[in-house]
Image 1 (cartoon, rainbow, N blue to C red):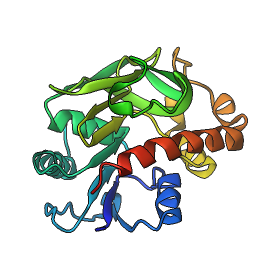
Image 2 (image 1 turned 90 degrees about the vertical axis):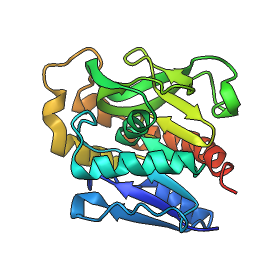
Image 3 (image 1 turned 60 degrees about the vertical axis):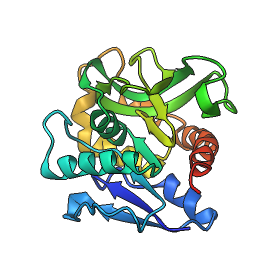
Length: 233
């Protein structure tokens, strides 16, 4: 199996548990740190799949590296290369495949429940999970479904939380965050928590029972990541 290629956009949103999951299964991967100046290679014949992590930015005003990622996603989709997108990565996928990204009515930050749009969900992406479960969120924008995409999950704060198109899975939320990476987000973007918008939790609420909450998220991640890996031949 060729390695997976992961794109990191900011140091406080690393592969984290996703990296642990892959290493535990002996799956090779490489991480390209775009925040440190790594290029966005356009070749696809040396990878088995692409993963786009979270990070800051607005895909409607793409930086040079975002534009290159969008072009790569389009090429990968045409070549049927499996793609996984997380938060900003999901927004990049939506944009690349014909969807739209708009500012949400409010930011969505902290631990929030998502629920199935239909149960069981299309293609069994989340069928082994409860109809409603808790995930970690930190985003200001929300994506629409690209043409042909199947919406899978929603939340009270954002109607579209996950969609799939064949071997492409896009998730607005995080399952990979460690307590350390969540603390890093609070330290770096703590101003997002000011003013207490309706879907934004306080730092105290976010960090309450943090170890237990991340461990529960990892159990969900195991199911979702395993399902995505099944699309890689």
